[in-house]
Image (cartoon, rainbow, N blue to C red; front, side):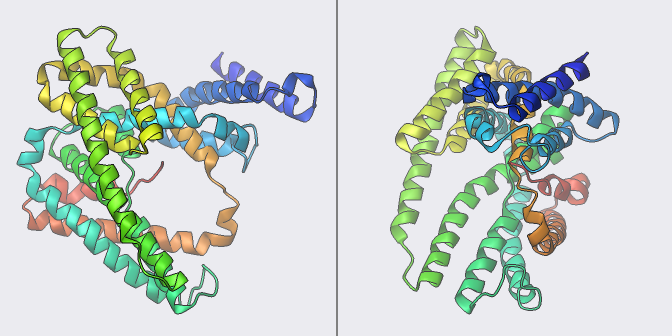
Length: 375
């Protein structure tokens, strides 16, 4: 029955696009049909992915790629723009979950591993990948002909991208598998801390790159403004987390609606005051979980119940937003980036973890938690 519904919605969208008429004037109709197709298709391909022993997230991403502008075109660029609200809502819930999964006790117990692996990634992967890209861009100019300054800027930005790890896939897999333990605590802690560092690193590197290419200096005011935004975002997130914790601990009515309301408030603050939406929701989740432990169970269950449809929409939109045509011209660079990132992530996770005396599971398997990237 669900396959029939998916086929019916897809056929309707195709027909309305193929035959212009007055019924297809309102763009919101296209957005709603695209959303419905993603929701129905996401459940189906998620079940198929599980049957093939793959994460459901993989199915959502593939669904988005197939439905998106690069393949079937049933979800257009205009639809993607119209669904930005859902993407921001999904990111907020994912970040709220990331903060809520972080326990102070677990961070205290595994702080050596967390610091060692984070340093290995933020410093080691950045420097090593930048050096490798500098050497590779000579014989393999997949970015075109670059002068010395442009080449330096390119390798610095590629090095930063090699370090980056979105928490979205990590949280989705943890939620789906209901995993717990030192390995999960370490991967999640490093991912969240790296997310904070990448904000600073990318801004600093992009500012340096602009200075190198343009011949001017680095605007330190940009770094100062970013630092102020981060501090204000953390303060606002702390206040949201306190409000959420007090409500859940003393009232606790409709927790699913409550966590959605917190994310919507964060979105509004981000747009109005130019704060960081992800930082606010991460901080809110962390505070609500650790300051109000009595409310933690209900809080996490509410997030878990709210997550499945959010993950479907978010990762399908990520897949649909990929311009697959780019791979025809940049496949060499993509292949190099993937291989370099994979090798460095493995080496600079296992070695720091061993030096920090991490458990065997962390030393052997933690690197896999830092490979996936979506969102």
